[in-house]
Image (cartoon, rainbow over the protein chains, first blue to last red):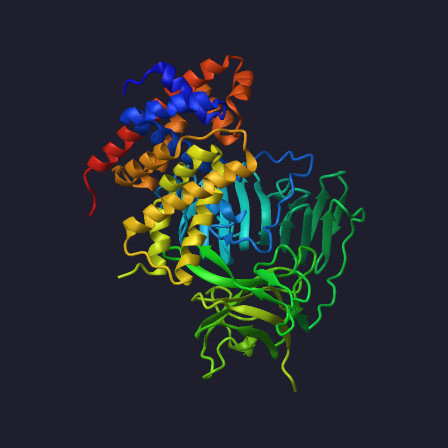
Length: 442
Length: 182
């Protein structure tokens, strides 16, 4: 390819956003006349996009753990904005990177660090330098690097050689390494851990943007969202360091602790009593980390949330899937939306413009915040004649939901709902006017 | 027979780099290009829901290219109105050629490119870091590298040629590799 160097410089000045109108006209004339120049511009553009993809993959690679200051806040997607679970990231991150993924584990050798014991939804791995990216399936072995579970209903369980387990619940990004002691960087999301006794002087470390945890051997969960870190310990003890000022506190069995830029206090607390009833009727815009398009009440229609399109990618078969969803999520400080009891019932008041299949999905946490599984059901919604576009109430006993994870098949007796999704497979313009979780009427 | 939703999503994702590149050469911002691609996917599904049909993959891609172009121009007008863009007939010409260009699979090229970047000398990787990972304008890249703007353009040209060659060699080698254990 022999291109006029002067014209090629013009091309780079264009891509740099520095051309005058006259120069742009000159460049356009050259491009019209030279097929090779056009081919080169297409090549440059493709390379730029793929290099940009690599950049985003590096955004959550393994990084040094000498974090002294809080990392930039994670911004929640706007309520109305379509979210991509592939991604999810954060949801856009994965969408950008899927082309780099291969359903192969051959690149993960030789330094296997963890094995994927369980995965639902999408779990991807990237090498520490961000150069390689692979979609992981159950049984895959992975070296040190970044792991990303993507999707509202995703879950992944990783096991180290010593039996220590990490559970990524929902859209969660971590980076894992082991240079004599295990280190996990939790960029965002919820991470449960069952840590086997570690060698003396070499505790497992978990670092978030605001806190560092030292763990010798215990069971706990930690959630990191923006500038908030919430630790819930089930058994044993965890030493929690606040990065901002270096203060530390020991958090014991069944205790919780919160680190936030806006909160001075740092002390362990007992879990708050969770209500067994939760209800939301969309009378005001929902929190920004929920999903759906909020619509205010009108004279004859209650306030509601309209399902928004979400493209889930790389689910079990690697294919993209589409759902139209409204997602309710507990905040980063709350343990769950509502405590579950065996008699709990999920209710939703919905309307659609056509018959379809309604998908109801919950993510459940133990009382101490440890991930306890995902449960779902699909309901055919067949409005009676003349009732299309009329509000209908659906009631689903939680006991009728089926688990999505083999390893977590049972609803915990002490569980709470972290996330509730009501969605539709088809685009049937679903709107949700009310969501609730409450004990069944006696 | 009109394309079903699943095929539409698969087809668009298979052409992601091509469509995003079409956006990038207008907006010249990789993140914005990615956002525009996503918006186009959602628009396609919205259009389907509203009764539009795509008869085949070629028509879908053609629609996506035009929509991507419009979205990109809107983005540029809204955010960087001072930046000039190429004439619309040139953009259309590029789109048309993109549609018929024969290239290996996008994931294969992306993976090969990542490997080529790893093999590139440190100064080239630094250039990539500054220009594409950090998204800096070339003037800042020049300042960071301690050279002139023209030198940055020359280095970028050289780098992209080397990467192109490297990717072609890598993908050709893969294509001609004999099947083993099948």
